[in-house]
Length: 634
Image 1: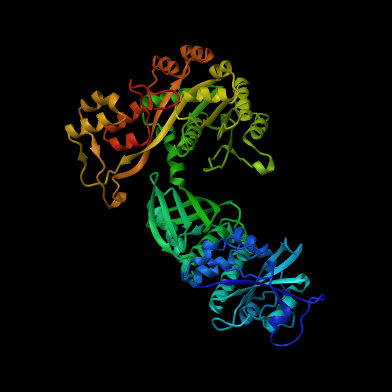
Image 2 (image 1 turned 90 degrees about the vertical axis):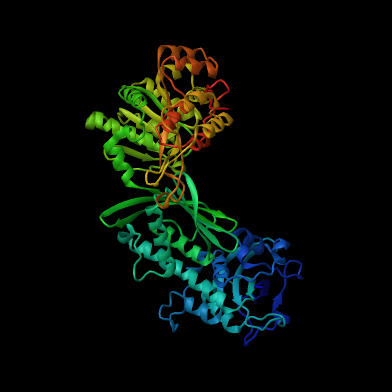
């Protein structure tokens, strides 16, 4: 089993030690933590948080010491690198007369003499700073008390002599030299990536090809292959996840996560994540805090050549960094530009209502739904629709978090909370820019809600999203955010809610119609029971998902939005002003043509576009009377 042992060695006041090939342990080693204990743990379990404990002479959880698993060299080395203080190590300078090819890079000394400084930290027990250094244990198993080679001390004194205060904490790596050498390799591999990124900004700005290059190391070739595979399979997200002893790769396709690869060595995972972070202009030395970045991919497949924008996010987990990449295919943008709202709203009646609301000179158009329901795509389609309607005759400004698609002809603003640029503050500034149409990525607080309503009252058309489960649930949500019922009623032109459902794969060789008896039992036992008569008596068959190689054997390919929409009317305005109960709002809206989302879903079911299970799975909540509540609750 690979163990680290934490020891402390005292130096003389001038930062020097006695000469000799070996520092006698009886004279120069002093054990801290009550002078009597060693700290042991598996290196793969060493997270930055654990290192903080070790730096303060704390014992690691005893359960971690009981495991006797042998860890791969790559995993141990990756764990070691995760503890290094990047800026501290990069501050080292080798002697000018050093025989190394590049004296400014002392990794040769580290490899030759078997050490790796981790960093400086405050020792709470000693009340002062201490230098922590990882040293290769050159002794045989079960040795006498460990020693510090004089050559190691000499090189440390040259490199970090100014940091050698009274105490030096030595961490002996008992698994041999291979692990330490690989750790040094990993560290300087990351250095090369970051320096290449910093000093070659012109190439970093170029799209990153997903084609494997001849000079690519194995891990980089693997990363390019993952990205190409994700684009080929129409994935919206790529999940690179560390686990205990190994990692895995998953893709989100049509809203469902699909496992692609397991048992990925942690060493490979660290290098892939580091490389992608460098390409995304992220800080590769920062592993303890979440980060966000972005890059652009170049993809070619036969005559299909296009660029794919990628939004990159990392978070620290107990096993290491987890990375998620959101793939933003510009093909979607081109379809939105050419088709407008026809791309997202397939029901002709709902389409006409939404376009009518966009034709207003003022007011609020609200698109609601949970995260991942396609609200942003619908609003981007609305932007293209307004561009098609008005061309250059309207000043359109957006404030988004994040800006996912770059829409030509639209002034787009990215929220930056750290700089004080919030939805509300950006919206106030936008109103001084003579806007005609303003898109607010999300109304999430009373301040933003108030400014948006006031902007609508002063002659601006506001497009915004809100997190509610049903269209008319937006009324209560805006009231909860401090909105006046009178102002809500007089400004909101349309309340729209949506979900995304998967559509049946058109490439499956055969379709599986459900027989009438099975259909009757299935509908009667589910949430769609109030609509059983309409489904059972439909002229066409209801299909189940079949499955083929083209659709990952799921039976589905692509997604479409199911919607409900309540347009402003005198009756609805009056009901909102009187603050009638939610179900009463639904009844009033139905009198003006409102149809619950479930009915739009059943339209798609009976048209052969989706399956009964898919309608049930998205949680279209229907009461026993066949009426959805305004909150969307069952």
